[in-house]
Length: 388
Ligand SMILES: Cc1cc2nc3c(=O)[nH]c(=O)nc-3n(C[C@H](O)[C@H](O)[C@H](O)COP(=O)(O)OP(=O)(O)OC[C@H]3O[C@@H](n4cnc5c(N)ncnc54)[C@H](O)[C@@H]3O)c2cc1C
View 1 (cartoon, rainbow, N blue to C red):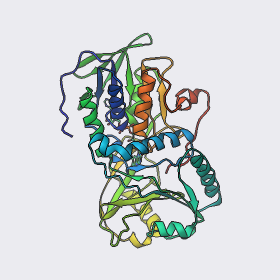
View 2 (tube, rainbow, N blue to C red; view 1 turned 90 degrees about the vertical axis):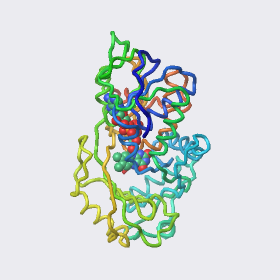
View 3 (tube, protein in one colour; view 1 turned 45 degrees about the vertical axis):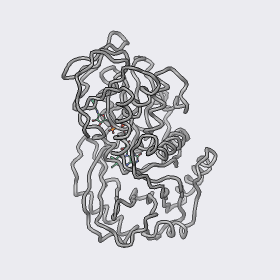
View 4 (tube, helix red, strand yellow; view 1 turned 135 degrees about the vertical axis):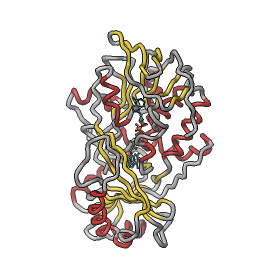
């Protein structure tokens, strides 16, 4: 990323903490709406948190209607991203295919599909034979049915980051990389400024888009954001002979194994046997035997293909696996968009627009009230079931 640090501005209308897809999309939409002094702080390089480590899946098939709405709206943006932002993002609308191997999952996904259809998503339950035809690498052993959503797919998160960053700068946003926020200055419940190693930026508004690190940022203003980092790993395989270019983003829901085409090979991911709840993003080979076992079972023809590369990244988990989006009641200058629990990349475009609306005190174009932090105080959680 070639964006250079500029001098620290003395004052901002709003400071956004975090330069992943959420922070950048929010910055862009605020500036486009006429907010003049938008400053975005990123402690490292843009996208270096979870965004550039995502599998790039984009979809509207969720169990929660807010997520369906956010996914669907974002999908429309991804479809128009290249002409709108002059930035190719390598979007492949090859569909999402959830493979289901038990009655309970089949019933849940059937209900979800009804909700998705009612909201304009073209998803449907299909037979095992049709799933095999769509995703020829799978072994169908034990499968009962699948959910198929043809408009979904995958694209390149780094390119989306570049597109938003360039457009945000052109719209007047000051983007400062290698610039951590180290605290927030308050007076009573009013925000006065954001601290950095280079000095303080005076401001009355902060957007926390700090991903897996959001809890720390919230703590500076006594807003308890329940976000915990959970490591997830991915491998890229060597080229796979005769790979069907239309292979969907395929998820074996029970095992959490998933894959999609990546160049001549496959990107393959799965949860670890034993969850690693920390900021550690080192690759851990203890994960590989479980992955190999799941691959032998569900995609045996590629189980012997070599691994070319891989990486680890952080899911930013909340207790109900659903995002935290809102404005603090106690500290009204504090806004948050975090805790996307492993499905945030695909929501970045819509969430940026929602954050713009919340900041401008407009009714957001998607009602996200139920994703407010207060749901945990009310014990009114909203579990999102369609994640692996
Ligand atoms: C292996 C893996 C696969 C995934 N696959 C998918 C997928 O297929 N589809 C999907 O939608 N999602 C996926 N995700 C989830 C997705 O990556 C995240 O939900 C999304 O990127 C969150 O974006 P964000 O902008 O909120 O967070 P981030 O991209 O993490 O951005 C937050 C930024 O804040 C910065 N920051 C933190 N603290 C400070 C501070 N004090 N000062 C300044 N900067 C700070 C961090 O450096 C970071 O860059 C995946 C995640 C992983 C790990």
